[in-house]
Amino acid sequence: MSESARATYAAAGVDIDAGDKAVELLKPHAARASRPEVVGGVGGFAGLFALKTGRWTEPLLASSTDGVGTKIAVAQALDKHDTIGIDLVAMVVDDLVVTGAEPLFLQDYIAVGKVIPEKIEAIVSGIAEGCVRAGCALLGGETAEHPGMMGEHDYDVSATGVGVVEASAVLGPDLVRPGDVVIGLASTGLHSNGYSLARHVLLDIARMPLEGHVEEFGRTLGEELLEPTRIYAKDCLALVAETEVRTFAHITGGGLQANLARVLPHGVVAQLERNTWTPDPVFAVIAQRGRVERDEMERTFNMGVGMVVVVSPEDVDRALALLTARHLPAWVLGEVRPSDDPDGPRVTLTGDHPRF
Image (cartoon, rainbow, N blue to C red; front, side, top):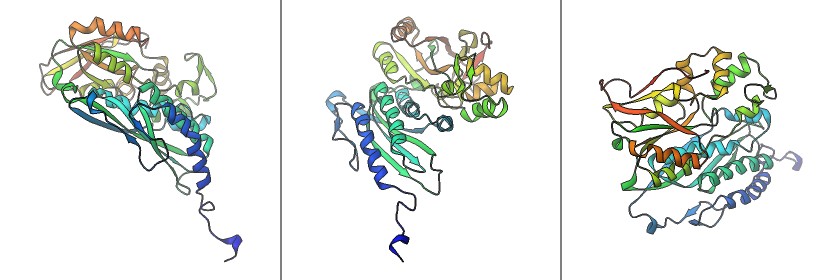
């Protein structure tokens, strides 16, 4: 075999030098997404985090893994990659905080068809920003090049986050009582769920261009679809510190009813009123352009409610005041009542949304 014909890893599609450059580019982003417990920096075989047990008497570690889904297809179509990481962090840390856990650190996994250092930097800059918003550290991760399996410009992301909560402070269904009040925390639009249906309706059926201005949104369709998922972790932890929180529900795939039902005990039903809020315009546009039935919309999308908190009735006003002070729109959705049918639904929605 001649020298010119020798096979190389780079010729097979894996560029080690580009991978090394990408690591160097992301180090400053990881450095700003840190905590005092972090030991060392990015680049080792494993991240180190000192769990200072003096702060917690009986700590339980909580862990969650998630991805972003087909929202990435919109980012790829627009060649805008600096917000997908915020979505990724939100999907992970807001599952952790449902248990009452404080997010400690996160590690990401980025699979790409070809390492383009600047694109990796853009993705990780969003992950770092998400970690800053959540108050957790970015403790490293992995970027894997998959030539032959993924197109050069294709990528996917996932992450695992770890949090900690006192054993005596774990939230969940066993704390919920009849008479408790359900509060909704506003989403920033679609968040990171339902994009397969949203893209099918808006791009395939309605043939709306991503770069086109949409009057109902006051911006382009692409800007609406790439609006980052709101991260609620710090807001939820503030509620835990100041009020008697029973449980949280992160409203993701399955919608409001399915996710709230997961954190309710047998023997109760959460009765919610649709007329207490108006879903963001994007939901109405999808429903109208795709002739999507309300039940299908509510089963697929968050419909404007990104997180739910169940609190004691005595703490409703305090919780709403705290959320208002944190500039997070919130309102009473309904209340928890005894169930007449143990085998019936744990969450009911009644009434109609205003102007939807």
